[in-house]
Image (cartoon, rainbow, N blue to C red):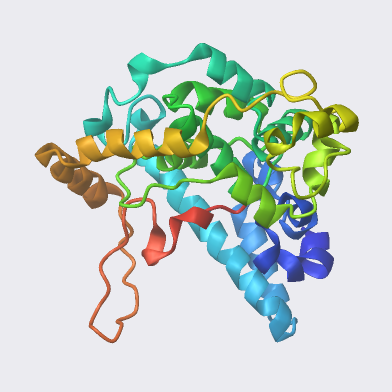
Length: 315
């Protein structure tokens, strides 16, 4: 906590998305909060005290950090209020969407970090080795399981829960369902693993650290090594299908099919009523400020105060 508030915290805003910078820019307090070594009250009070001392460059980062402490409590309250969401879909209209089509081979490849998508595999391998991963990459792992591999969220959720050093059920299950599209949010959160790699690890340093087979692959191919000509693969010691897996699924085709399947349910008259029930029970009651066209609508369930739900996490 002291190192974050006095040394590392200035990089929090803007530094928590990439696994390269997140290792130091994130607070790294989540295990201590999950295990009770620190209380939320202690962290909030220390953050506010530091805010009275810092210059404006730090203030924006610490304010963003404190807002995620509020979100943390918001999510924990969801499970406290409705414990069933550990076991069943948030919106029951999605029951049966994926359950009968669980592919064990795809799940195992995802678990082991052998999907053939370097950014997915590097993140899973880091998580398996360290017990920690920044939030954006956690979301990407879960979205890949849900949309690319079309896996029902429960077994991936259990696997991640066993790996996370900072496992907190109240955050875990709402977030897993949000990233799987069963929580009733209007937006489907899809992550292109190649683009995420190019955006968050443009030189491939993170990928190469966790996937030694890609050590000699050029930057321009490190996030899509299957595009390398076969002769060049051989010369670089990275033959796809031998030294590193070929992609187990075609991302573009998989997400197109996923969108179509979800769209069928979204056209159902029952869905709107089911989402409304979740919203009434779990939507934020905080009133956001009025905009130029009058007061904004209340937040969707899982999205406090109208904030973008892609970044709802302290981690």
